[in-house]
Length: 230
Image (tube, rainbow, N blue to C red; front, side, top):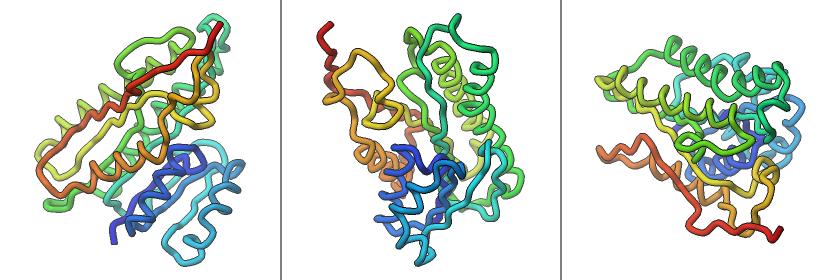
């Protein structure tokens, strides 16, 4: 049975990833902050009871988590998103956004690779959730755009660093989705938002492909973007 660890399991995309992985027969370690774990416990109660899903809780930062086994896949979906002009942000707000969205994922991957070195013939997929913000800049999201650009550079560098191994690093970047984060985007018609389950299915399908095809940067844009009338 393939195994995966999904960070930020209470979030919209991570929740959909857990659903898709479980449906495909994977064993899932779901990692959630304690304050937001109720949704995960309720939705996946039967899978937790059967042992197909293990739920791990952290109090504050996901970097508190300790890997107990290697995995076929690791999904790092966590992020903070509070759109506002940079001048309106506090220094702590900037620090928190960068820590959650960039520094913590970096340290989690460092911890995973240190604890479980690459094994020849054992393919592993480390998957970061980017955004179309990894390739462009948008007003009132300067810090978010910067850290997503950082993830893009991190993934490109790791794929060079581990080119001689069977470890693969992915950046899945998508447009706005029907999630709690997506509801914070102003001025757009949500009917054009992406369905997180569609995105999750694309992600799982990509990493599960047994062929030699590798697309380290997957961009899922909205074909149509609708704006609200002023």
